[in-house]
Image (cartoon, rainbow, N blue to C red; front, top):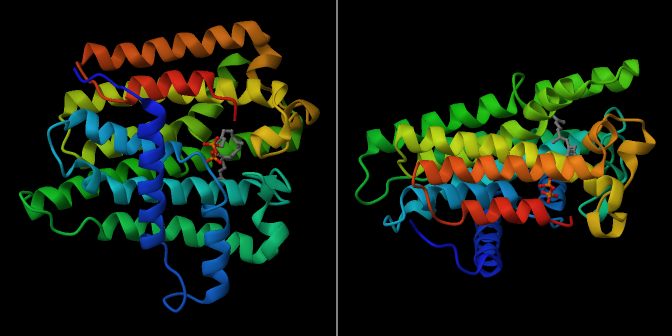
Length: 310
Ligand code: GRG
């Protein structure tokens, strides 16, 4: 199994790779009208952690450590995941949803470009993500074109199911209905809502990276368990940071969930028990990897999620 030395340096290098690839893949003028290009670009390059693309790249490397082409195979889907994630944040911040004015440390998209263009920027990012996954990577040495097409199709299915009505969109709909009616969740309802809203895309990130690098069904299944557990821990930590963090560190409005009376892990379990739940989840995530003899950087990324401060 690979060791995972020097995570910060590895993460920095992958984030730079992702940013370069996003520059290449994101349509801009004259291919698309300048203003929509600008609005998509504004949110995509506003300073996100790039967690989903980094997870996709780490999963690709983990299942194909000897394959020098693994990063090239996974990069388009990695970028598509960041585009889909960014669309969800742009739409989540709209007045009709969470109505927020700060995201990634910057004024939200609709504050800068207006509500209509912000909706279109989200639509554009989402749609271009699927075009990108279908188009790239083109032919690669040593990979049969039918095999490459089959991997792309499976990755597109994985990502679209995670982003769609049974995944992230469905989770957001549950959240929206609860906010509108003032209804609350019990612990299981909260877990189920977040499994769709946040967890599904994180799980799809690792699964799609592993699929593109040619992982076996057994590896992909283990990586999906890892992704589900990581998604749960990520959300619990997000809730804890909302209580403990400062807006300047988080790059978004802190304390908003509590102020809105939203159900959160700390509200249901308290802070200490929430931390324990998150670390238990990360322990299950890393066990799924070690049981399947999957090495690389995934386990270290999971531990970093547990200690993150923004
Ligand atoms: C509008 C269909 C639709 C869905 C929105 C994910 C989501 C659903 C809304 C975001 C609300 C929110 C803050 C959820 C908490 C978890 C989360 C997704 C945090 C943001 O992700 P990070 O921390 O963000 O990876 P960066 O900016 O670093 O990429």
